[in-house]
Image (tube, rainbow, N blue to C red; front, side, top):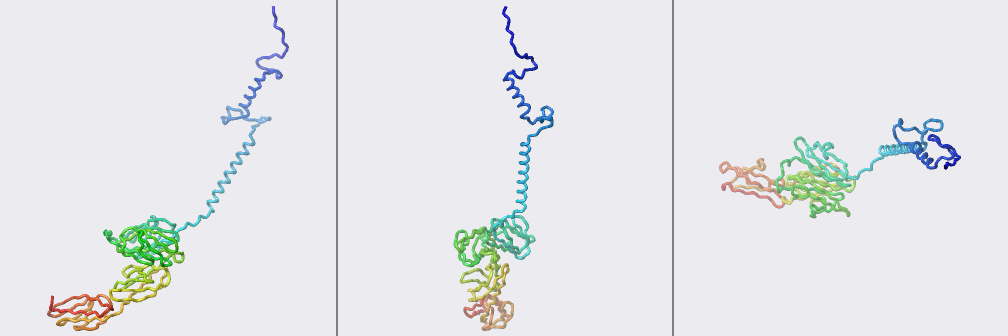
Length: 380
């Protein structure tokens, strides 16, 4: 009978393996178990996973992980502080813009720009360049119109309340354009209209595009024309001249106003915009043969009143057979009347006769020639 030879070596049981002869594959398995359970802990409940400990049994923390977290916290704090102080102390750059001046007749109207209250007229505002909605209210009177502001220029709007009724199709309004220095070429709706300062009297009601070219540059503005009123635009080249002035002509007859042989306005306009400074003006009323020169000094933001004192010219009156004569309601005597000095312009003459009744005649006194009025009271 064959007997298995006895083999010398350590005994192996199920609970203990001799260190010198244990299987190498068991060592790899042991290392894998150690790695899973000790070297790479996961974020789980501490009651179900072992805590890393050092040789003394106290909890052990990864110093590199703690240092990394600290660096991140400090970096976030520094970035937050930098943004805070940057926002707190940084001074915003001044926005380029222009000026907007609003006037009304009468003054004291409430002004709103894009719905925000800005004050009462007359009012000057410095605003960034762009388009705005301007509203002006004076009691029950209210106007809202679009305005445009360009860099380095002043837009002036003068609001009156005489034209509160709805505009009739075909009606026109006026536009006064002034520049500093004078001499800019003015185009309205792509049509050349003249050299500033000038006043245009034939613009249809509504919005119009105005372009002024001067000194190699051009400026564009949109203006709202209202029926029977005068809109004003001023293009200034410097802050010192940003706010223009104006003149208002008071005359018993229509008068045209010229500067350097250019028409800049008429007496039936509420005002004529002019740059600040001294201006030599020529006043002309061709209907009565009147021409005169006036020198006015224009102040920023102010309107200078210019009264036209017309001279007198002779008026001769006669009636057949005779009549008592009244001129503009004042009795001047009985016909015949010769060389009565009367102010230039239109006058109403009333003839009265006790049997032949009353006749009325309008006469225009001019410097062109002696005005003569004669009437036969017997004819009807």
